[in-house]
Length: 356
Image 1 (cartoon, helix red, strand yellow):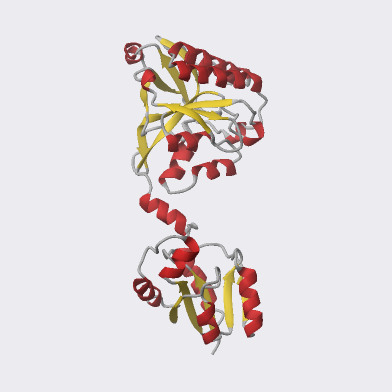
Image 2 (cartoon, helix red, strand yellow; image 1 turned 135 degrees about the vertical axis):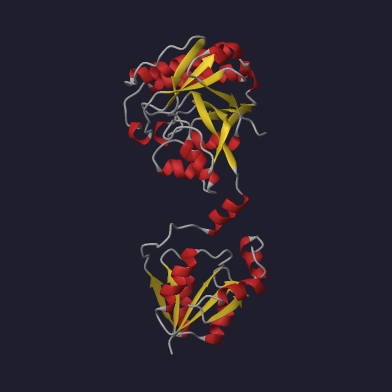
């Protein structure tokens, strides 16, 4: 009989674990699954398990591909299974390609004459998810705001970052949820950042992986009117609750979606973008609608310069610009008063959102 052994935390079982167990079991005739017990998990990762050890044992034993379950109590990080492993002396220790303790495990196998087998990554039968993502989904937000930006957009893209530059944006309501998304798709309002947050993922990393900037998930997570320092990662300069803009912002759908990633390489006036960010920062400090209108006007000038179509005039609006960096989506209109906004036709009302 060929005995196979695998180890891990297995704190919250998901389909990826089951696929790994199946592939490991196929290497032999008997599969032992070891998990770090509660005390060791606390020592090594400083957190409580999601399930008590006895519940975890029962759950793992119920899987048809698992023949035996043991709880590891080894003190060496990454080798919590070592004492029971030395006792059982299985024929094979199976690990994944990305096992961060692979070198230690391979050395242990060489000492005991056990085969060390790295299972190659195979196409997942389910969308991959990590234990951390599951924890985030369980404890994560049910609703999230979207966002509009006033000035400095593009200076959050790492390759366009400028020392001393600022990005100024605002989280907005109505909020969205996984079940209620009342805005258009691909709209320039940071929808991908909100979607990542609602699904328990790191929105900043998700946006950077797309080759765009971090401003969307940063302000959606922070809320309020935020002034950010330009750079490779979000650094908050300061924030306001946005009360001075209550009743003064609205959206107009342009009729076509936008695609920010495809616009990253377009030539644009980054000096003017930086100037718009600085003016928007001044406006937030002074809580001045007039100064913010100037900043939005500068941002719109940049957008027109890179080829975006002219936006329609709306009665009572003092400034306008496209939301986001793509050609299309929603346009932001700023009004001097709530009465002016309420009288405007075709405008969707939005408000600053601050959960501080």
